[in-house]
Image 1: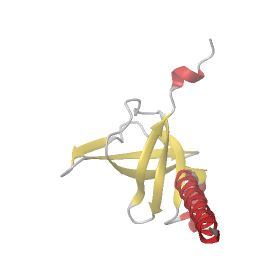
Image 2: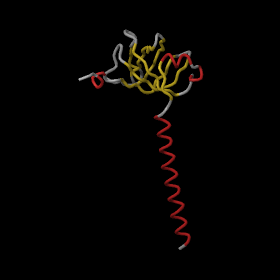
Image 3: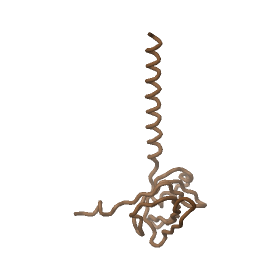
Image 4: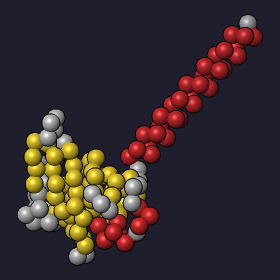
Amino acid sequence: MRIGLWSKVAVSVAVVGVAVGLMAYSFSRSSGTYVKVDELLADHHLGGKVVWLGGRIVPGSHQWKQGPSEPVHRFALEWNGKKVHVEYRGSVPPGLADGRQVTVRGRYDPQRGFMASKVTTKCPSKYKAR
């Protein structure tokens, strides 16, 4: 009877441990440093680290082509007079347009630019005064 109790306790501890581990992993994947373009370019310690990058799409900079399995988008983001080139593979939100403020998640490589794994746009209609 005593072994059965210890088995239940061990299984319960293991289940709780796995749940906590999965929550911590999920949180670490969604969180990260948020910077604007000028801050990214000024802080050399951010190179190679996963960050959320905010800026406005430079008018006329968005180009895309169909890759082997998904579209490849390239555009420039600017903030406070600084620009960085962004590459993103996949479908972009419908609100992606010149001058629109966007946030991208990914890694910055000084040689290649910002390699984004996620793109989100701010919807201006949500923020307009009524």
